[in-house]
Amino acid sequence: MPNAPHKNPHYALRIPTTTMDKLKYIAEYNGRSANKEIEQLILKHIAAWEKVHGEITFDS
Image 1 (cartoon, helix red, strand yellow):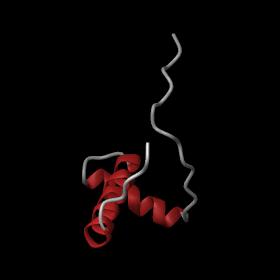
Image 2: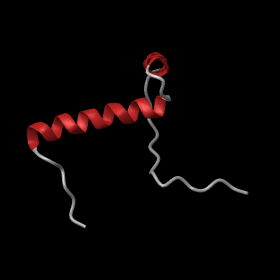
Image 3: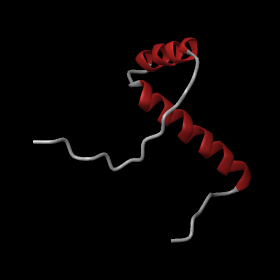
Image 4: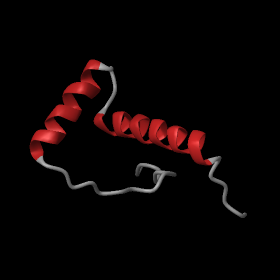
């Protein structure tokens, strides 16, 4: 049985190996995958931006 497709879009990230290794180290320390660590960092960045500039909304 094939795996179900992911509901979230994919994004390829190109970063230096050393940076990725450090990210993986931090993610492991936090008990997360590198992907989840990046997701948490993005969510924190969005929250900080919205605190200053207001909530980002999109028309349906």
